[in-house]
Length: 269
Image (cartoon, rainbow, N blue to C red; front, side, top):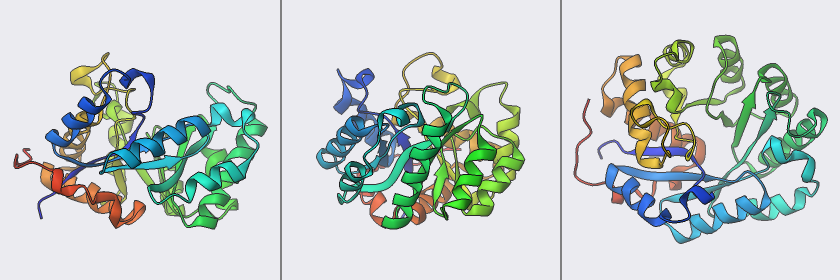
């Protein structure tokens, strides 16, 4: 079975895709994607993510409360009910954002801990958003016994990466790896073992350099895989194969059950 592409972090439920959501998915499958993880950032968006997963084989859901919305969430049972659905393969995105501080830090930490506990309780990986709070986030993850998950759209330094890896987390790389000034992020990709890397688009945000300034979409994860392969000194096929295997191990083998969609076009270096 030849390697397949995956996008481990997308927000297709957002209004940016309201007019052409199905065409975006069709382009994703045509480009070689086998699976997309559709990520909620609040209760309502998590319900939308779940609905998308139910309607589109190859799309899976991640349900959670973003740190920006932490102050408006106080009912863990509502998230637990969503997480029990068979299309849900992860909790998140949750975490800490001390850059924008749209929720008080105390509320961010409370919501983060509750979702980490839910992940442990349900044996689901946790998708972590972290901005200007790596020291605090890793400490909380350790205290709550979180050992399965991914630091999404990683933007920290080598020491942050080392600490997250030590806990057992994967690191996910997005479009900024293709930007000319992302030397620190390229150093991270060199540092992280191939078997601990994931890729994502975080669409509609963070489009790769080739289409920077435009709306991002899952088909464009190809650019991220290609750049990571070049940095690692491996073929495009080898990079895609590693990411697919890492995705299976973190999110479960069912995550890639859409592999039959992959076309006959071979991946190129």
